[in-house]
Image (cartoon, rainbow over all chains, first blue to last red; front, top):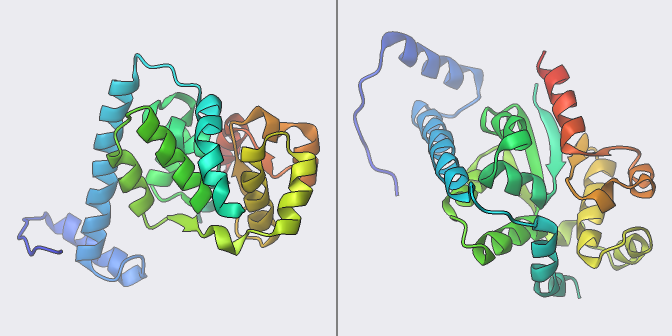
Length: 76
Length: 149
């Protein structure tokens, strides 16, 4: 669900958004802003996740084997 | 112009939860310099491992919501014959869907490279079968740096 908010932007920031829309990269300024925030949030959450994983040692290949049996069933 | 690549689950896992050598890969996806393709199987495998190890799900949700990250349905590349053929070349059963997906996407020209951290998939026989388009993270990082120059 999208919520309408009001933000203040610098002139150059607004020009940048307009340029992105004009180039066809995004359909609207709102879509561009949503995409930017999504990427920023990803960076934020990722840094937290990496910090939490700092003392962990995970053997991905071993974990992959552990989960594979159930997943491979979809190809039967 | 962005690179179109496929990535194994171990690459995305490293990128999202450990960083290190996968930082360049992550930044390239985040900054829209890479169009990334994964299969449903790879996405679900990654999610299953994250759950098992009680890692936060939010980075995965956000990653797969990016418009330059594309999840391809398993039905679009599954073939009984291809899986049977792949089983003769690839050692582990769980690597078969990965190999077949990579092969399909490379053959169709949808991706230029497939990146993996799995040593078995980087063996000479597999590399040859995929025309040396299956590469390690280090090799991909070199390609990415050249591409961005």
